[in-house]
Image (cartoon, rainbow, N blue to C red):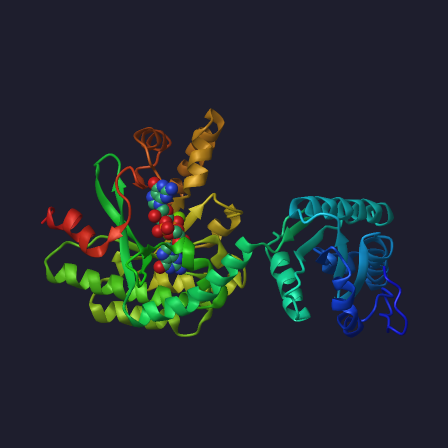
Length: 431
Ligand code: C2E
Ligand code: MG
Ligand code: MG
């Protein structure tokens, strides 16, 4: 590391404080052929502190500064931003991101190994984000932001990761920043669309229900699917606006069906965790459904496991209330994550929806099929209905039927379609 006179040092790591790092940054970077900035932090630092104590936490930070800065021959300047977040300006000998990424990963793994010898009770993992500096770069904050964005891409898995801030990542961030305003405009312009996907009874080979799914019609006419906007709406808290609109559209559609003399059947709609935490949300949508005159037993609320990750007692009480009020409840995406049986046992639901990934996996082997058959038998014994999602082929249909499942939803029968198309295809012919 470049020795600078007169810089103020951080007490724990003995690295220059951030202000002095910033002061010397561009002069130092200007002398390097391929200047690269790497942000580093420890994934499980909080847990380390809890397990090994703060004194050892400080020792770990000191060791981290030694390993990544003082004894790293490529490091030219470094600082601790806060907590366990450090930033390193290093000289790369190639502009190849993959090579640098690999080298840093080795450095991280070496550090984990060394620390593991000293603290065998906990294995630490590093989270690194990196970016090259160009001659056009003038603002240190922007560079730190890029590094942080790259770090955010790293998963919470049990391994060290190094991610570069690439043009593709920049594109993705730009795209994300456009989604919220695009969604707000779509709400205002009534471009949020209600799509319906039929559910089928296998032995009767006829319609058994439907699921309401959201789509957005973009200004250029493109139809956007939930994978594009739901995760961001969840992150930003705007998901309630989407759920509210879809429930309103569904109630309006069912009211229209009733007016046309169409016999109703249960239609499910997805709820999110935030719908349960926002005071008054559920009462408002219930009032809307009641005003439309749709009997509550024809509305089914689908819940995924993310609904249950916090405040389980409060959420369960609200689900009980929905059920007492006459709505149906289904557990969505069973088997897709860590959806555990103890949660299922606590939730007063009517239907368990087996996720496509679980179905596919189970059907691959005889043991898998046996597990699925036993699970279905058990659920049915305790009065749950079971449904398999994502059935694409006749073979899959036959196999899940053999496991005891009679209800399916999937491309084999139909893809989701807009409400008018659904009405035309499935309901007019039945009249
Ligand atoms: P989900 O609730 O599990 O919905 C089923 C998804 O599986 C739908 O994706 C559907 O199009 C897809 N699918 C159905 N059959 C097949 C098949 O045979 N093969 C495959 N590969 N996929 C199939 P979609 O419409 O893209 O929705 C994705 C997810 O977005 C939904 O998963 C749901 O979690 C969420 N979502 C959709 N609409 C809403 C909404 O209004 N509010 C909330 N909170 N989430 C929504
Ligand atoms: Mg669903
Ligand atoms: Mg599902």
